[in-house]
Image (cartoon, rainbow, N blue to C red; front, side, top):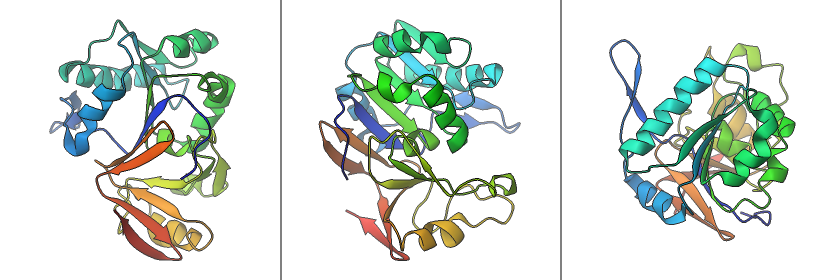
Length: 243
């Protein structure tokens, strides 16, 4: 997997399991687990504890962004990570993106809609801002996919069917990545759409795809990548476990 010349460390993940849901569907933060050495790697690659930055997927849903960010902030605090400040980056402070990124110790790129997220990334010139960033980036789902050169923008609901299947990401990594996928099923399938069977496997005849289940991740550091947990390669319509 090739990597553009960057100075940051990146954890490419599907999910961090930062919360549980109660019987009413309300999310409650929990401590991070050290499964697949996640905590160890966060501690090892965290340069300092100045600022924890949460970059929203939809820059205009302020209340939702605050709620989602607060869960992550509390989960990290419960896990022993104390930062001087926590920042939600969306359209309320987009004009300050440069100084926010420069001061960041850790940046979470949230999941959500691929195209909507990249539109916001372009708005704040995130790719340029990350060129000299030396901290830690954690991509979650779409936030992982949009770090790559090209993104397989498969539909998750019928409203997505008119969108292009392949879009451009920030270009830091060459691979196509699918999150929430164990090589057999895609975790979130809506309204009769079969992501693996109808989109991923047929596309794998053109390009290899890496599938990352929840709980697994790929760590990039100093030009070297390492898979933590189970990851799968989709190639020519077949599924192979990556070792």
